[in-house]
Image (tube, rainbow, N blue to C red):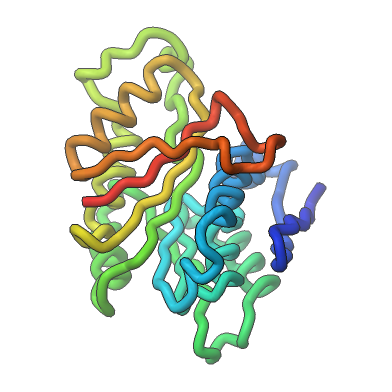
Length: 229
C-alpha cells in the first residue's frame, strides 16, 4: 500500500511509503518491523514521557517513531535520513504535523547522512539549542554486501554501524539523553557488531525485554535496547 495508517493508543499516524521505489530509495521506502516494535515500546513508557521533550530520529525512513513522539507531546522532533528520503519524510511531516508549522510543538525533516562531510554541521545544529532528550532509531544496520550474511571479521568493523554510532554518540549528552533502538537480527555478525560499537561509546547498554509489548509484537528476531552515555 502507498499509504498506511498506524493506530497507537489515542493517536493515529498516517504514513506515505513508496514500495515501488525500493530499488532506488532503499530500505527507507517502506515501513519495517523494527520501527513498529520500537513504536510499541514507546507506548509502554509513562504517558507523559515525551511531553515537552526534544527528539531526533536517525535513519527515520517514513518517520513513524519520531512522528509518534511528536503526537505524544514532544516539543521538537527532527526526522533525519539521507537526501533521497527527504521528500517522503517531508510529506509525512505535513500529513502528521500538529499545531501548525509555527506552533509550540515542532516536527521537521532534515538531511543527515552518517559519515558524510556535512554530518558535523547538522549534528552541531541539532545540539546547539541544548541537550536532546531522546535519540530514536530502528533497523539502522543492514548487510552492505552479500558476504556479510555469512562469516564477518568483526575486528575489521562494519562501516555503516560505525558511522551510525559516531553520530548517535555525538547527539547524546552524557547522563541525560536516552537512545532507544530496535533492529532485526539479520545474521550472526549483527549482535556482535552492535555490542562492540555500543559498549565503546555508551556507559549503559540495556537490552529491553519485549514481554511488555502486545503479543503480536513480541518477536525473537527483533532486539530492543536503551543506551545512555
